[in-house]
Image 1 (cartoon, rainbow, N blue to C red):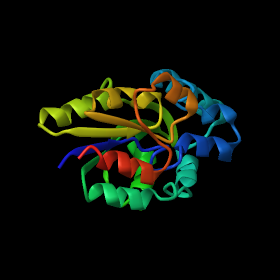
Image 2 (cartoon, one colour; image 1 turned 180 degrees about the vertical axis):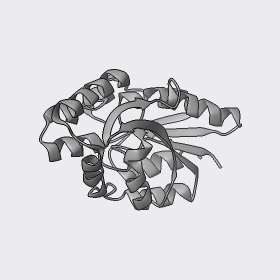
Image 3 (cartoon, one colour; image 1 turned 45 degrees about the vertical axis):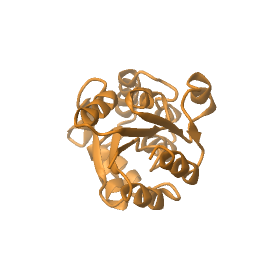
Image 4 (cartoon, rainbow, N blue to C red; image 1 turned 60 degrees about the horizontal axis):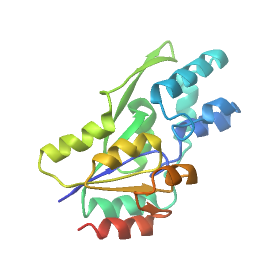
Length: 198
């Protein structure tokens, strides 16, 4: 069985930070790697905004619990898991993602950790440098063929390294910049693209 590496936010679930931004009515928190490609720059901005507005982890958790997977995501994930070894490779954090993993049926997730003190997010720990590329390389070192799908700049390394890489519901500016990757605007199209690799 081939391995399918999927991004999480924007592919299977809504963007968590955008949901928090909408609930808190703070536009700066809505920025993603689509807007700020360097992940550390983006996270430093988010941490600064959280401090300025004294947004607590417990409040953010309540917002996350209200979210549901994207329409069609559960059916797509069920289809994918019957055909591939599915690994979700994300730049989110375990503390954010666990409620969504429960709603997705507990797929395998590789992501990062938040540092929390007194109900406040005070920092974060990246699993390793360039984690999406390294994850694909690790599966390939085990002699798996790797397919990958993502929606943003931070997925490019994963798509580059995979044997077959695809965009899913990516914004036009990303598609224009990386035209070499086939694009699926919906799950049936992504299923078709993935099936054609087998």
